[in-house]
Amino acid sequence: MSQTNNNQAADKIAAKNLVTIDKSDIPDGGMKSYKQEDDSIILVTRDRDEFSAFDGKCPHAGTDLGEGLRCGDRVICPWHHGSFDSRDGTLLEPVAMRGLTQYELIDEGERLVVDTAAKIDNRAANDKLTDTHTIIVGGGGAGFMTANQLRHTGYGGKITLISKDSYAPYNRPLLSKMFLAGKMDEKYLMLGGREWASNNNIELRLNQTVSAVLPNERTIVIEGDDGNHEQQTADFLVVATGAEPKIPPFQGAELAGVYTLRSMDDAKAIKGATDNKNVVIVGTGFIGMEAASALMQAGNAASVTIVGRSRRVMSNIVSEAVSNTLIKLHEENGVRFVFGAGVESINEDGSHVSGVTLSDGSTLAADVVVLGTGVAPRTEILNEVNDPDGVQVDERLQLRDGVYALGDIAKATNQMGRMRIEHWRVALQHGMVTAAAILNEDNDHSLEERIPFFWTGQYGKSLRYSGHAATPDKGILFGSPDSLDYIEYYFDDEAEDTRASAASSLGRDKELIAFSELLRRGHAPTRAQLSAGFDMIEQAQLLSR
Image (tube, rainbow, N blue to C red):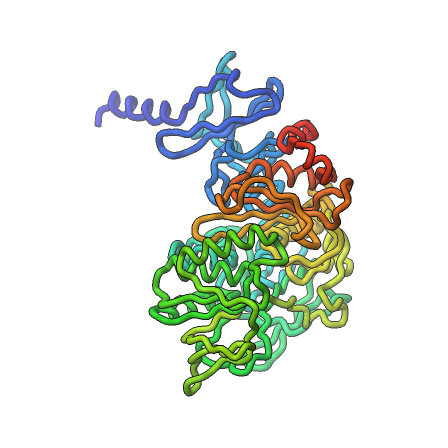
């Protein structure tokens, strides 16, 4: 190729990387996304005469961030409420696990030129606490996020992550949402990618059992397969052992063909066992409902039946109206429900499941039984400091000086009070807070400035829930659950001046974002305000200016 042709090719590439934008398109304090021919998205934010440009796809699931809301200095994803600093793209709130890629801007007066080939390096130098060692026990969301955030915010010491699992940290919520349905390959579940540990200089020790934690000494005991014990002491010790499925004392619960769904191995086993089989799922919480949805979408099971004592599904989270919608959605996809009956026993044919006998005496044919009957925190290695419902920690998740307990085992204080919450986003929040505490950073928000959030995916529909309510039965419903277009606000009592403490929604993403932001800031609307036509989005944006 001639030099002229080389120059022409280079000019074409350079032109492709340059995107011109009119400043007047973007209001002060606002943002706008620009979709490109190559399917990329550019997001531009504005504060008076200051503009910033970013990769406009949320790094969690690729959502167009321009479809979300900007509230003050926060750009909030419409799907899963990941939040980013509007000025430099810093991650403020998971479930995203990293900040936004920022691009250089060329100011041409009335216009801006975004150069997507010129990325601004906002990475922190790993020069803090270089002579220290952090040990993390647990490879779930909380443990992963602690290690990841430490490395991305400047920690230069040694990090050792010890996990009982045989896999590097992976995205557990997607097991019941996508992986079991056959819609996502295992490699896409890996948090940070397959080379995350080596790329971040993290010593990852898999298939390791920590048999004891000595908080006062910041020491752990690792039990080897040969029965030998190894002790390790750290400057900072993070315990994030997660939760394990509860197995009710059913006769036959130990039979082959009975499964729980918590780990990658669990999901693989269920996938391999359900081809042309009759599946009974015990439990109407979101794990049971998601497993049913995933199996029906995979299309391999002969039948799927859900058994529940209550006549509602997800009854501790959503109202009867929303529950009825979810039941209808499942029935339309071929799921059968048996309500108002518990499991008396799981029947066997030899050593394998053959059916389920219910408390009313009826029997269901079953080749596979999936128990979605809740989980319990894995706190046994911290039993000397246990609360019956988790480990009591402070607002920075500290149990002792330099010792932290987080994720599903932590009974911690947040915006909604002291509680233990088994949600993925909360686990990731805990990781962010712990990393900031180790680094003694004051610029990261404590748990008291954060709120819970979770979502459930069923048949391609995503129901999102923000906050925490004592009951879903004192709510105000707007829209129609049956048309998959609603938002419902939940209250802890029926007083007119009581503020909403949670909301669930299908299809009203911006309104739920706005509510979440008002709730986070301590300004959730009252029952009276909502009844009077409170404009959630307007109020959230006004309060954030």
